[in-house]
Amino acid sequence: MNYSPDNSNSGSNYGGSSSWDPSSSSNYGSGSSSYNMPQYGSGSSSWGSSGYNDCVQQCMAQYPPPPSYTATPPPPPPPTSTYSSSSSGSGVTHTVIVAPTQGVLRFVPFTVNASVGDTIHYVWGAGPHTVTKSSELTICNKSMDASTFASGPQNATFQFDVQVNDTNPIFYYCGVATHCEKGMFGIVNPPNADPTSSTSLGSMMPSLCANDTNLANMWSYTKNMTAGTSAAGWGSSYDMSGMPSWAHGAFAENIMYVSSLLVL
Ligand SMILES: [Cu+2]
Image 1 (cartoon, helix red, strand yellow):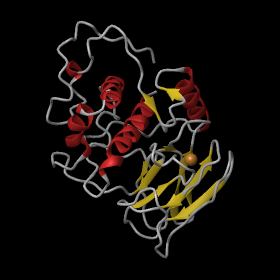
Image 2 (cartoon, rainbow, N blue to C red; image 1 turned 60 degrees about the horizontal axis):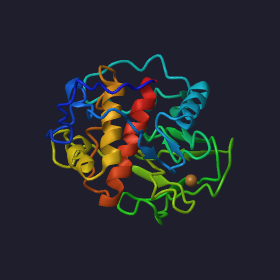
Image 3 (cartoon, rainbow, N blue to C red; image 1 turned 135 degrees about the vertical axis):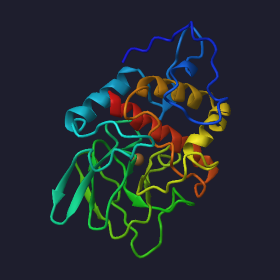
């Protein structure tokens, strides 16, 4: 995944476009002669570094990309049930990795689309981390509803199952201090919006990137990585309207992280 900035492409206008158009390969590239991969997650690893490669290699070794994940018309669905899933009884089991490796504060995949009767099967790649139910508005606080769940702090190889009893969005996070605020949260059945609506992730990306250089670099990188693939534009239809504004950047990071992972 060597990244070579195309210096001839100096007419950078990403961040200024009104919608996320990953198919446009002409609007990435800052024109700078060097590209510093933005930090993500804990800050202890960076994109393009050996840390990221190690993560990807480990993830892929354990959970190779499904052969059935093929191009779909935009907006493509999240890489959910096809991403390491298996049938179990009447429902489908969706495996989610809790921190693929030490220092990577992510749930992979970040979102899962599940049906009633399905099981979310969490497998710890590193720890300590938790899987704790929250809500969209208070995404880093344990929910108090009757269906709340919490794994407690766990380490590598631990497994935890959550049954899906309805198709409402289920937000969850890691309860270890500061992890959620750094982006360690995930969503089962995330809310969707028309990709052209003002609250969709795709519509909000330009303004998010305008305020965050790291995010802008990551977006540029992600568009480059996913151009022409089924992962291009993935997640752009997600509805951010119910989410606290502080989490928008972390949400976008998670989407881009998994998008890039999909095409490696
Ligand atoms: Cu954690």
